[in-house]
Each structure stands twice: as structure tokens, then as C-alpha cells.
Length: 103
Image 1: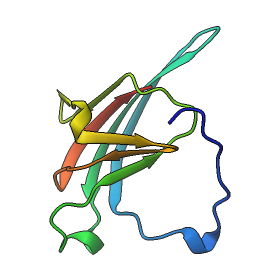
Image 2: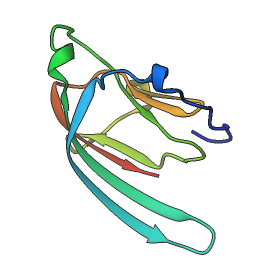
Image 3: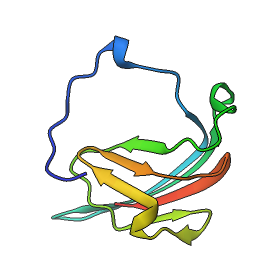
Image 4: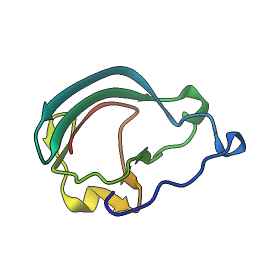
């Protein structure tokens, strides 16, 4: 999520979201040189995808440095997620869960 340039997104690129967000909590710590953001999301699998067993969660972000990621209160080790360009992918998530990220 660092050093990538945003790309243009066209309306034709949009798809039905895999996950629905039921609740969002954000906490910002503004600093002179950097800002710390703690996000807490309650998500659930979109019923349109329920027939699939494991659907990864993909979040977009540009120029972010991931400090911490937790699923249902448990810190994830590096094998459970991937950062590639402007995407954070959590490989395996349950149908309902709470995701906490610190960037």
C-alpha cells in the first residue's frame, strides 16, 4: 500500500461488493509528520456470494503503511494477508467478522 499511484476507475469496473459493511468506527491521531488511523469494521459476506466457501476480502488504499491488522480481535500474521500495490487482501475470513486495521 505504499508508493503506488492511484489508477482511474470507470463505472464499468464496478461490481457488486463481496462484503457489506454494517458498522464503521474510525479514530484519527493527527501529527505534524504523519497521521495514525485506527479503523474498525464489522463486515458480512454479501448474500450474492454465499454459495462460495472462501471469498477473500480486498481493500484499496494508497500510500498507507499497515501497522497492525486483526480479525475478531486476533492479530493476523503475514501469511494471512497480502499487500500488493494499492490492495490489502485478507485471504480467509468468516462470513461475519470484525476487522481492525492501524495505518
